[in-house]
Length: 120
Image (cartoon, rainbow, N blue to C red; front, side, top):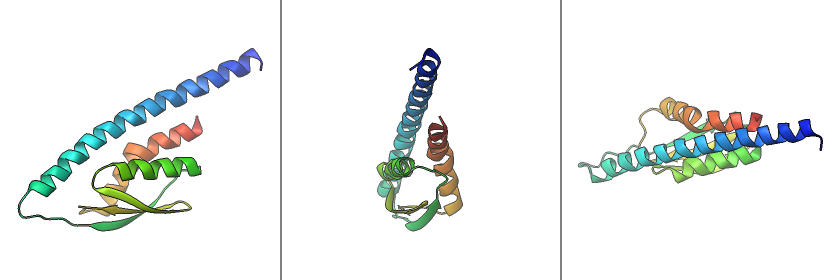
C-alpha cells in the first residue's frame, strides 16, 4: 500500500470508529429512556398498553446495517424486531399511539448514523 492509500484507510476507520462511538452513546441514552418509560407503564395503574405491529422500510443498503438496526431495536425495552425481509423490518411495539412517531424516531436515532457509517 502506498502512503496515500494508508492515510485514506486510516481516516476511513477513524471516521467509522467515531460514528460507532456516537451510535453507542445514542443507544445508551435511548436504552435509559426506554427503561424509564417501560417502568412507568408497568407500575402505573390502570395498565394502559397499546401494543402494535409496525412495518419499517429501511434505507440501509447493506445486510449488516439492516441486521444491526434490527438488533438495536430489539435491545431497546418495549420493542422487538420480529422479521427482516429485504428492506422491511417487522417491529412489535409494546405501547405506541403513533406509528409515524416511532418510525421517525428510529430513523433519527439509529438509521441516520448507520447510513453515515455505510457511506464512510
